[in-house]
Image (cartoon, rainbow, N blue to C red; front, side, top):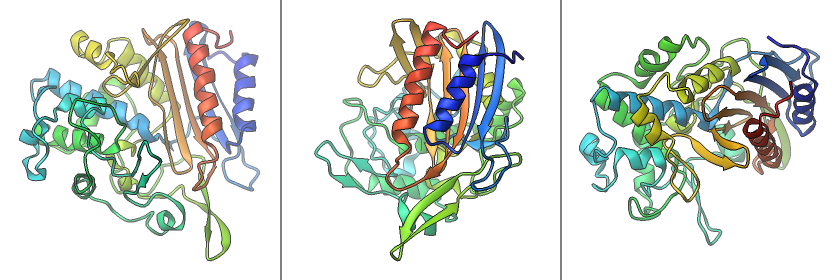
Amino acid sequence: MTTSRPALRAALDDLLGSGFLSVQLRVNDEHGEWAAAAGARELGRPAGAVPDGHFRIGSSTKSFVATVVLLLVAEGRLGLDDPVAGRLPEFGLDPRITVRMLLQHTSGVFNHTGELLPDGTVVPGVPWRGAEWVANRFRTYPPEDLVRLSLSRPARFAPGTGWSYSNTNYVLARLVAERAAGRPFAAELRRLVLAPLGLTGTFAPGTDPELPAPHNHGYYRYEDGGREHTLDITRQNPSWVGAGGDLVSTTRDLHLYFSALLGGRLLPPELLAAMRTPEPTAGYGLGLFVQETAGGTVLHHHGATMGSAALMFGSADGTRTVTAGLTWVDDPDLTIAPAFQRAQQHFTDAVSCGRLGG
């Protein structure tokens, strides 16, 4: 592991200075591997951030779900263009919705965590803001209930005629995978991805609120009864977001996974090509974003959940990756979002041009 890379140390410090409580950063490229952490393990305590701790990866989960589905396609257990209604008849889904549409967010299914409509109207879903989320943070939401909530709201558009990011697409995709495999998703994830790659820090927690040690802590600031509160929310039941963002991982595992995926060591060539073929509206393939830059193609799927986030970038061939785990003091106004977006853009540019600091 290379140790003296001042540009990466500066990037780490910049992230910390933009409002994050802790940052774990790992870079793998032609110069070798560099990993470090900065910040605090817990708010108001002197212990420094752990460098390779577990963290909740939010929507980076979607890439893992898509990979499992595609590996089941490779095994002949389902097809990308299979109607989802035939796999999950109990929901009465639009028969035009296919597995591919779920993975690419072109199904039109309402997002169970809520939608912001083009006219500015907010249509709520499960609670995810303020005191209401805090009160429900240990509640179990069965995936079937999340689907039924979504289907109780009007579709965003006819299947295949638009693009809209919906966590429910991936709740459905995970249910399809379980039905096709005849086993829980966690077992298929281990069989198809985690065990072959030797990933020891990644798992699907289901309804378990615990985060294994070591880890850094995430927090939530909210108002209740006219008073402001700051709460440690490291422990939370992630079933409210479900397969849209519930996995736990480490920067090491994210690197090993993404480099293997992009390097062609997980999927057959034709399915990797399908995964990397973007829908033109947002550049979304099947479980990852495909971004063309002046320096080349960058693949990524980042994620954020309450108090915790992941960055996961890779070059087209997987030889250059950046993975990060972040914690902060979250709030209902998502005030950390601009800093998170700036970090994404910084590393997109660095990965595409190979300017990660040698």
